[in-house]
Every structure is written in structure tokens, then in C-alpha cells.
Image (cartoon, rainbow, N blue to C red):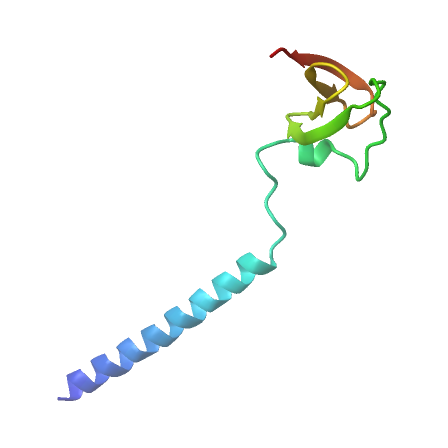
Length: 101
């Protein structure tokens, strides 16, 4: 009977220690800064990018996506649909891709 009491107390202590360890682990992960993404563009990209695109009237931005170390800006209207690649470090246009229909 004495061995059973000791076993119950030890198991209770283990449950409490495990629960406290789990709570501490979760608290540390939520308080830690986020891990850098697989895309290096987050580390290179400045807070804001200023770039002037010389596009025809009627052109509008349909979407923007980060692609490696460039910003891909999808443009519609004012001609065929196209994608303009922008270097976020300088704001310069790095390339054009036309999307033929």
C-alpha cells in the first residue's frame, strides 16, 4: 500500500512538472520574434518603395507579389496585360513581361 501511495505522488508531481513545462514552452514560442521566411525579400525590402511606372493611360494595378529579390506588379488596361519587375532596393524597373491573350 505504501508503494502505491509513493507511485501516485510521483506521478502527480510528473503531471504538474510536465504541464508547467508545456505552458512555459508555449509562452516562449509566442513571445519569440517571428522566424524569417524562406524568401529573402523580407530582409532586403525597405519599409517603402517609391517607383514611377511609365505606363499608358487606363492602366491599373491588378496585383503585387514578392518574387525572390523583386516585386512583381501585375498591370491591366492600357494594352495587353503585363508584369513589371521592380527592384525594391532602388525602386528601378528591372524588367517587363507581357502576357499575350
